[in-house]
Image: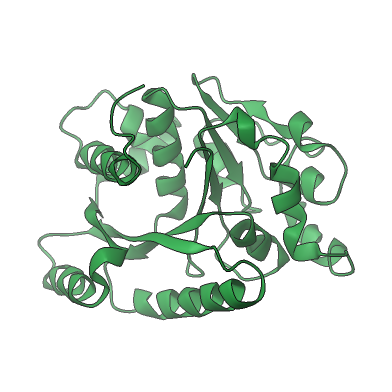
Length: 261
């Protein structure tokens, strides 16, 4: 199973992709797994959340994709044990244009990752809320996809679009790609709509849905400001911390890796 490459993706924004990418990466690193987080969103939210200075234009995922630098040179230590990052940059927007004429352009990231896969147990790719050459590269480079989905009905539109995209990629580019799970986020137990949404998803997606759901928690807002992920916070009563700990155990249990390294 290891190394495992997981894309965290949804074509709709504001559903908790970056929050999930950061907390899963940090949480697994805290448990002793070697983790690489790749930020493929030009807004560089993962990089900011981990306190990485945005001054790595020549050591970024953009540099990797357009051959400005080898991928090994673009790996930046986060300062957290077992966790590295390939940061993003606003210039990543230009990669969509620069790669239009590239040969086998959908497989560029897949080829680059082969060199560094043996260094890691898990590689997470935080995808942007869009569909273009860079997001498709991210999906094709991955073994599986985690789909964060906000507990509101309009979030289903983004889910349907992504599921259609996955089917196309499976048919034309990577048949082995599969959905790791749909992760319900921003759950509010006092909201009747959220309760209904969770019940509807459990009825319709069953095994595809993670048992764990991520609640609304003011701690996520505070973690962005402090650049300390919720899962690494010192607040044992944090609902967000407990939820991501459960999610990590659920993920590891699927691959018989639940024991802490």
